Length: 289
Length: 287
Ligand code: SF4
Ligand code: SF4
Image 1: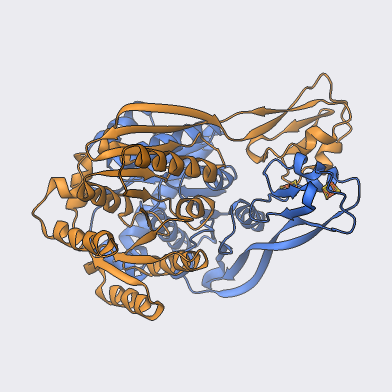
Image 2 (image 1 turned 30 degrees about the vertical axis):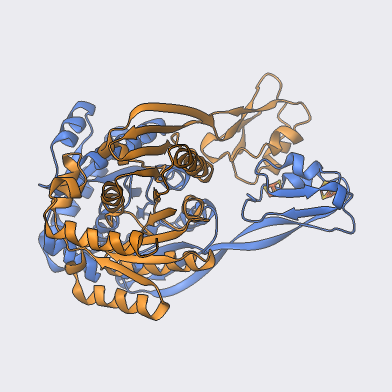
């Protein structure tokens, strides 16, 4: 069973919740799909790490000695990545999308597409099972592809080690990396917080889940920070038939746990917020089984 | 001048800083523009009421196949770098997968049969709002299901071309959307937290900003929680620590309600404005 923990934006405590769930599951494959800022490895210290690099994107490179300055490539480029300077075409790397059309149109064959960024897929075992995560090379765009690779690797581990629980820590937002993280999962847990921005983000991520027909739970973190807003979230869930997984109180101890590289369930096992997390865990992972 | 407020991950208080700084600048009589580049989750609008001046639709040109002309030669498929042309010649099936298409036009160029036309699909919108005291707010927003916010962000940045002073609330992360925002900025303010997660993300952001040759400074949010590792890192790297925002439940609660602390408490205005002056001075000494 694949469960994706997402939030519509960062900072709702999504990763801390995902880590706590992993600790409660005890036997689990965790897929950190926040490939732009993967950080569960900091908590889990995976060992025997296996790395795999892959090249994602390409960038146009122009040979000045061949380019005769006709400017055709500049006309064709739709990403404003080419311009003319001193009689030659030049590439503005940050804007190049790697489509390769310039290389096709150049009558002098002065342009080559070079594969540049190196992203890595990593995987290692940790105290509760296996952690798979991706590291996107700086400026790399194709995070959807890396996310899919992370998920595929996680599924493979789950098969090999006969573990049926995969927990996905998803990226923020509603774009391609999120879509790649949640498409086809068995359930989604939306971690939200009671603020006006949290409410907007929740609505956006919910409409994405709906369009992908994914069963979703909402988990309200920092519940008591703004009770009226929390109630509004609950009303929204009720009106839209979204199951409420639980409420977690605001407690800076979560940060403390993180600083000590522990999940909150390990750091303060008997605390109130851990029992709130456990209640949510049971609802999400045991009622459906 | 354009100042981007960014953070390696979301939820570090980036929007908090951007909106309060924007307010503080207005309070000092400047006429800034707030550009919300977090097109996947634009929330700056919660904090300001404005009158909508105009909205631009951001479109992408995607191909459409004229199956009467198509000979199923497959050249378009070969030219497409993004696997957006799905074709099975023997059974005469060809389809454009719009969600994968980047609108590059390579297939149009490839086709010898004039079997490809283009149509426009909507990626998102950019809206400009007039606020009181002459300031403006520009909000970028992608449509649900759109693959990448980059084109919408670029359109938002273009919209600020003639605005003299722009505060950009940048998207989270360090991939393309972040880069397309900061590449247009004169200065980047990185907001982070003193935690291992915060430090790991900050290192990643700084590597990229160095590659882009951007000046940057750091704001530590929720100081007093977490640990000291981030302070040591900044000192080693000689990156200016511009401000610390202490952890305070009342700040979090005000933000949750959609209130601006700078509006409630003038000391915040002064604090943010002197930071702004520091950035301007820093920016000038660089050029
Ligand atoms: S426009 Fe570019 S990305 Fe889109 S289908 Fe054609 S070749 Fe592929
Ligand atoms: S290149 Fe033109 S003719 Fe050939 S398969 Fe594509 S659309 Fe059809």
